[in-house]
Image (cartoon, rainbow, N blue to C red; front, side, top):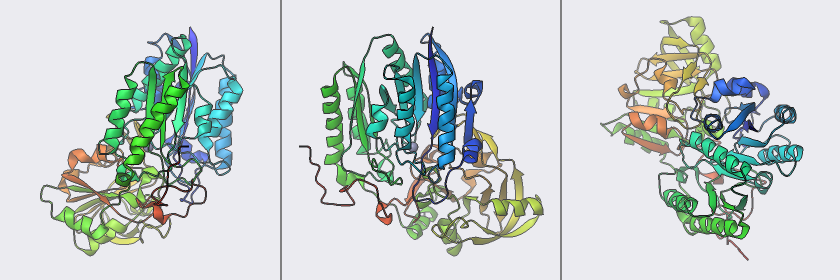
Length: 495
Ligand SMILES: [Zn+2]
């Protein structure tokens, strides 16, 4: 029986966020090896779960190596990155493998190397030699680099944002690897990167023009001789040379065709580039719109403090506007370990006066004074059984306090930064989201899967911050130039 290694190192790194990601932050989210990989990911709606599911059915032996993932944040510390990579390399060299499944993110930046995923893939390739088939999966927010693609045999990337097809991509990667090992296909891949930046708010795979691009991609995948195809709209919050969308086609042995088809997809996006720049609704208008909606609650997406994009999770600008205008009641989750400790010291059922949020930096609003009652304290562990963006099943937001204010707002304070991918984050505290007028979710498109079912509508709010929808706010040093829309006159020279 042929033996297939399964390894993963995933992080979405926001280079505009000054807090680096260390090893402990990987441990807080998930850093497991050997058999633990199977218990942690086996049932999860994640690519690792999909790989583990189909490998036995394909007649292949699974060799779980190591998986590491951390909540998006600043670039990964050199020591943490090198240590985890060395462990992966160690485990690979300790096994005799016939193939490898590698789940990377594609937007990981380490403090000492900007194309960290490219380096990870290249180091693994160097170790196993040129002939071992490696099939890689990437997040849709990958800034795909030639080094990543050049280091592996084939690649497949999530096709949905919110990311709900992660498990299926893992299954697909395993099938491509199996067919390669059987000698039935000989994957050749081509990557095309037009000089373009796609706004995070234009990346939703259900909305035009992305929906059109994904339909065209699916048609292509069903053609004879095409192994798979992918579109990665990219991650504008990583200031790297490969920032921007990637169009990738994998064919069975036909390099020129792979390149032509990838060019065709990229051209289609380029032709609609004016539709790929979107900004959100101003804060005041968003709160007014929410209060005017009697069918509520309305979810206000705090795009400038998009935790899944690496922001601090304690931005207060929407809460400030809600309180200032006497709107609500609102449900707001804030990362604030100090306020949690104050609630824990005071105790459940007691009244507290706190200054909440706004403590990480001066970019996402000030701390906000609140008075209210501590309704519950929770260890922060919750399980998500449905397919949700990110595919995590076991989640941990650290010690968490729910404070109900005199105005009826529910302020959830947690001790570990947690992106709002799962409604269980608040349901586990006994909160009934439908009893509020306003739900604040700190993200862009990703929280839609969790919040849309309990909301009358979703409003993307143009909050400032390190994940603002307007990349013109950022000072780039490494991104490609020229790039549309930063340089509006950009010409894509294909000669
Ligand atoms: Zn993503």
